[in-house]
Amino acid sequence: MVYSNPLMNGSIRAVCFDVDGTLIDTVQLILQSLRHAYRFGLGREFSDEELRPLIGMPLDPQMRYFDHLSSAPLNHESMAQEEMAYFEANKHLERIVPEAVEALKAAKHSGRKTALVTSKNRAELATALPRLGVAEQLDAIVGCDDVPRPKPAPDSMQEAMRRLNADPKETILIGDTLYDLRCGREAGARVAAVGWGAGTREELTAFEPEFFFEAPAQLLNWIKELPPIEPNAKKKEDRARAVAASDAR
Image (tube, rainbow, N blue to C red; front, side):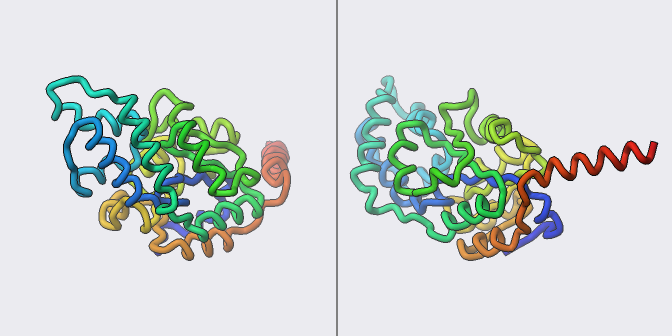
């Protein structure tokens, strides 16, 4: 586990999580589903290496990624439906990452605001959320349908922080791809990378996230070690600063 600045731990008041590759191990299932969709729509087979750069994108741009290889227009809607149907039919292949889910719950229990910031669309979220079992621990959910520009643009994280009424400097986004890290950092938030998803350790650490967690247990332990936030603590701190400033004058 790599910490760039462990002294910032106490200042984190909002924790946002990516879904695929972070809370759920879906990498192989996504690759298989994409391969199926392109076999259906384009009649071609693609390797894992060719498909892996698509992980972290919303479904629509995934379906358009290889348009340049077709001489005729592709039916992106039908391809997307095939991808989602294949994914749902093989959902037994996905694996919830229990320590990551517990980390989300622990963040909420500590008094912090929590959110999902994902490239999934509403239809995909409708099937994934019940399997996560975290609805009661969430203060906000932002999918790709909720913003003009999905990850890696900062819009998703900006919208999450707006809904949470969170200060970017006190907010962190935890994800497994460069799409996540770029989204969080360009929104002014802190970012943490996890080592069990689609991104490689080399590319993630080269981005220099504030935190890197090699294993899910490390993320859970870090969340559990964050100091608890008392209700209305932020308001108390703001009032104390205001009083101090007034006395100084």
